[in-house]
Length: 86
Image 1 (cartoon, rainbow, N blue to C red):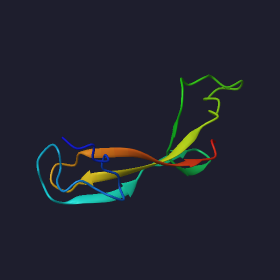
Image 2: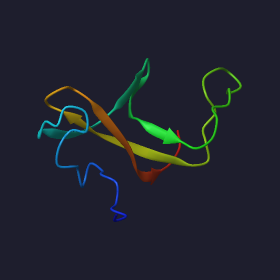
Image 3: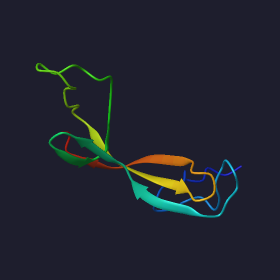
Image 4: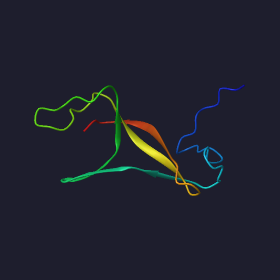
């Protein structure tokens, strides 16, 4: 057994782990709210409520990218690069 690196959007697996289709399309999630659009982020730890509602920013955040199977629609998400928390 080898310790192969897990698949990422930059190195996608050869086929969908759900339906075995060969078409995996790279993309990303967009977080929308009333004041704009942002790339989705993954943050460490548990969410904490901010003073005036919403969620307090984490100290560590990562950009999120994904792969979508063109056969069944399954999404695989990956925390790709460190980024500034919002």
